[in-house]
Length: 372
Image (cartoon, rainbow, N blue to C red):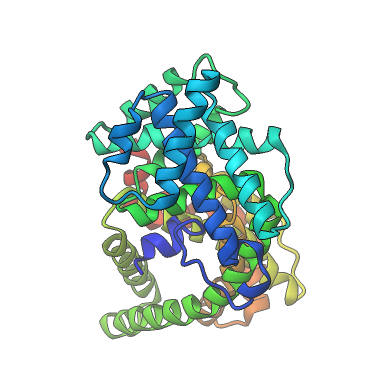
């Protein structure tokens, strides 16, 4: 799987598997089936109630399965009987019916369910704009205008901020559906989603760490061959090779720059203080100075960082990465890790300025912020 799916689309595009899947609600086959039925019911009801697709036009779809045919007829009957246009309540009803039949431990909270299912409309209309070739910025404006008179708690600016770029990163139907699952589960079943997330991350982290270490070791070896006695030049080679690697994996310079910055930021603001504390050095000045030196980049990438699961995943990788970096820095300074930590803390402002993302990876900085 591409790094795009492993890191940037981190959680919702990750494979739905884990070491302890049997006991997790979100991994149960009967839950998946109920969730799929809910999403199908939502789409059918939306199409019939709001897009005014006829019953016959929906039944004429060759791939229509039995559940879809039955649901199409049920929606048509409900419209004829009640004149309803509440597609989210219809979908919530299907969720609760299926969950009860399957014996799933899912709360029957109509207000929360309709709230969370209504947010699916954001993904639906954004996907239409993307498929029609509209630029991301135009789609952003259009979706805000579409819901300008609707509930601000459901269609909030932070939610739109988060999901517009994610919709525009999706490339196939499988990823589209995983994004829909992600939005619904983190909204309606946040505790269950966190349990699932923790489980898959523990399994994925080991495999990903091994792969990342192999890539890093190859890059470091290349740097040592190119500049055997110049650590500064080695660092420059390593930084640029890593940037090139991530850029090739994503095929998107801005996305690659975001991935690189988040890893770099968490390593220095969380990983370094954590490792240094293990060696008896309390880092106060350096993480503050580093944050200040990179504040403008952090502001640009904050939406990605605040996506559920991303921060936890980045923090899990931060300490191992920081330990390797401090080992390398200690070697350059002819000291140990404690000495390297003391050096960083003593010259916090100077080191933070020299280590700013703009100076370390100027091309990636420009991809995020443009020329200054």
